[in-house]
Image 1 (cartoon, rainbow, N blue to C red):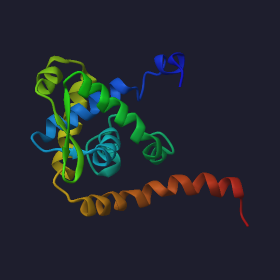
Image 2 (cartoon, rainbow, N blue to C red):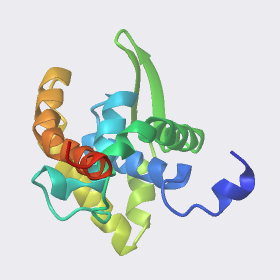
Image 3 (cartoon, rainbow, N blue to C red):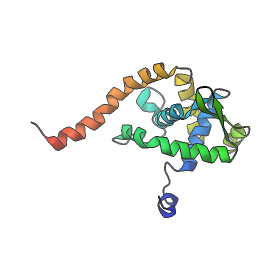
Length: 165
């Protein structure tokens, strides 16, 4: 990806996804999360309204379930940016690589006063409270309940393109 293409992208930049990850890690502190859980939580924090939570942070665009397919690389780049700035920490445990909030993460977040960041912080706290203590299997089951609804987004366009057979 060229600099020109990434420079003009306001949404899902490393900075934005990193900020979302830091907000999740601050809400969960001292708990740690692996990359896969942060990818899932990143989707949830943006679309809380889809999973029975408060109004979603971002608009409910069609085909948003497909975001999960590209989110991993975005979240990973954001985390690396935040680790480089000391706002997140990456640690190796027996289970693999996990992330937690850095020493200045909470101070950094509290210094940002925009409505978006305040709303993001509230959504991150809700996601962590609702899903943070679930095992991987429990999380998969809970997300699966909602994913059945999301899968209809894929079927409707496919059916309209194929037509009645």
